[in-house]
Image (tube, rainbow, N blue to C red; front, side):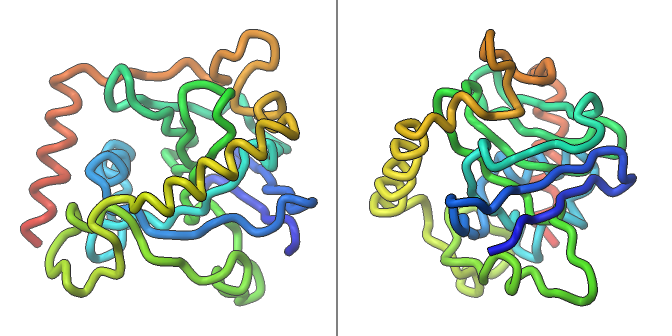
Length: 211
């Protein structure tokens, strides 16, 4: 597997997912309410979500990330005070992905729309085809057409935890560019939505399900 180039839509933020010895990540679609709400928060639901409300996600170690330009433009939001950190370009609202609120859990779910494809190369050839998705019970429209589990199955959770543990053992939690190496604080101050703002986004999300 080769390194992957990332960019926001206006080009101010450039980054790379380093392949190295980490190998290929895990690709799947997530249909959960919060991933859908994040797309609506950015005002880019039509670009990010598929016809059933799924976000195409590529799960990697954050230690594989390297920002080569514009990291000062990076922003993040928490839909709730205890929610995930959801990273995006403050300059143009391009989504990058989500992490836990602490670097101690080395896990990043990258939104694949920021992965650059040149020369007609397909995303499948770069990172492999998506596996069965998760949280299909929140999908829009005809759920029988969605290749996803209703939630996240135990076997998938155990597999992910195993990968996270291995990454910690090799020190990946100390090499995330999304957190300050000394303090452990996020590289951008999270915007925590208040209840009114969250309800407005949830109305947008739930209104789109009637389509």
